[in-house]
Length: 203
Image (tube, rainbow, N blue to C red; front, side, top):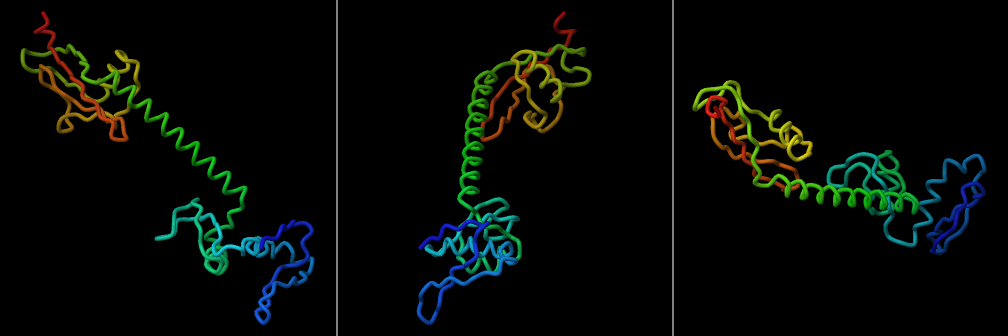
């Protein structure tokens, strides 16, 4: 059984008479209507064994903040809502959260596609640097900052330091070709080559 209840005009609450097992309507004093609205909303879902609530904070082994879960009426009323750990999930709230989840999934899908497009651009390409140095070594070195700048210059792709994985985490200081990895997230990795030439060798 479901009851359509308007907060502004409610004056009765459905209560089960355990002697007869019938639903009776008990009058509510008008000054208490606002305080009891939450109880009324819980009663509207009594036709099922569970009720939907949205967690207001993370609860171990229950769910994370913002998550909508199904729990028993007693657990919702006597613990989660009573301790302000959750609030009743109305149909409007459930719909709004579902739309938010779908939007996040769509954004994630677009982001994944963008990562794969970047991976295609960068895969197996070579970044060339010419620095002052001797035949085998250069002065200074090539680090994440220089690589990020060169990738942007050559491919029009903007990356961050966290995306660049250098061998052993050190700057590149040897003349020659070194392989590096670009971590674009979500298991999307790209291998690139960094070629370093000394200006003395170039001459």
